Length: 269
Length: 269
Image (cartoon, rainbow over all chains, first blue to last red; front, side):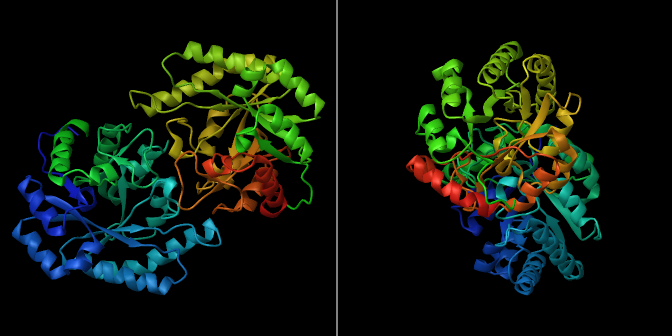
C-alpha cells in the first residue's frame, strides 16, 4: 500500500491491552487515529450506550467487534442466543462488522462434523444479523489455532460463506492467520467483495508462544505488500486493523506501542 | 487400523531422545519392535558401518532417515552436496526412505520464490537418489513450522513431487502436520502410491510449545483412524513411525515411553 496517510489505520484494543476502553478511544484519537477495533468484553463492561457516547465524543469509528461464533460446542441453542446478543451490541455501538470464529475441535475429535455445525450455526444467525444491519465476518484462523476454529483457510471460508448474501456474510483476512497458505492470493481474489475486514500482525521467528507471540508488522517474516494488494484488488478499501497478541507488547507503555505502529504503517504495507 | 500386532510399529529415535543410538536399537529390539527411525546426526556420530552392524545384530529395520532438503537457503550448491551425502548415508545403512524438509521462509520473505527453489533443488537431487536406490520422502510440515518448510499441505506436496518418478520421489504423512487440513483425506487419496512413510503423534490442547509440544497418540485431539485409513487406502502398508518432540516425554525414562506407545498402538490407530 503506497500511502502517506494514516487514514486507514485502526488499532485493535487488544494491541494496547493494559488500557481501559476509554483510554483506547481517547489515546487513539490523540494519536490522530480514526478507527479502533473493540471486543465484546469492552461492551459488556461499559455498556453499549456509554461506549457509543465515548466514540461520538472522540469522533472515533469502530472497524470491527471481536468476536462471536463458536458454533462447535455442546449447546448450539445457547451459542445462537449469545451470538444474537453480540449482533445487538455491535449494532448498538454503530459498528457493522462482527467477527465470527468457527469454534474449535470438539470433544469427539470429529472435524467434518464440527465443520457442518459451523455451517448450520452460521445459517441460523444470518437472518438476525441482516435485520440489524450487521455484517458477519468469518475469520479463518491459523491451523495452529484449531482449538478455536475448525475453519483454517481462506478457501474453506469462501466455501462456507458462499450460500449467504454477500451484503450480510463476509470474510476477515488476518495476515497472521493466512500468510502461510500457498493459495492465499488466489483465494482472496475468489473472496472478492466478501472481504470485509483486514487485520495485520507479523509472524515472529522463532515463534515466542503459540497464542501470545504475534509481532508488530515489520518485526517478523510476513511479506505484507502482496497480501495488502490482494485485499485491495478484491475491493476492500476500509480500515487496516493492527491486532497484536504479544506479552512483550502488552508490557510496553501503550502510547509507545501506538507510535511504533504508526511509524511502521506507511512503510510496511 | 484393526490390528492386534505391533509388527508395524516403528519408534523414531527422537521419541527416546536421551538414549544413544545403540540404546535405541537394543531397547526397541528388547521391546519386540522391528523398526526404528534414525536421524542423520546418529549416522554422523557413529558412522554408517557401525550403524549397519548394530542394526543387523538386532535384526532391526530402519523405517526412515531424518532429514535432508532445506532448499531455500543462500547456497543451493552446498545444500545439494549435503543432500547427496545424506542419500549416501541412507543407502549405506540399508534404508530406502530419506525425509526431505523443504526449508523455511527466506530472508527476503518471498514465499513464491522459495517454493520455486524447493522444486528446483528437488529436481537436482532426484537422479542421484535414483542411482542409489533411495526414495525421497517430501514431508509437508504444519503451517506453524514455515521457518522450516515452505511446503505446508499434502496437496502442495503432491504437486511438488508430480514431475518425478513415483519410484524415487514420494511423500511422508505426519499426523501432527496434516490433521487440520480440510482437504487432507482427499489429498492423501490423490497422493496414492506416493505415500511412502506414515508418522504419528498427537496435537495437545493447549499446545505446550510451538516445536517441543507434541503428544503421544491418545493424549491429544487428533482423530487418527480416518487418517490411518486414508493412508492405507492410498496403498501404504509399511511401518507406522511414532515421532514425538516433547520435553516432558524426553524427561521420562525411555523404556517407560516405549511401553506407553506400545499400549496405545493397537488402541489409537
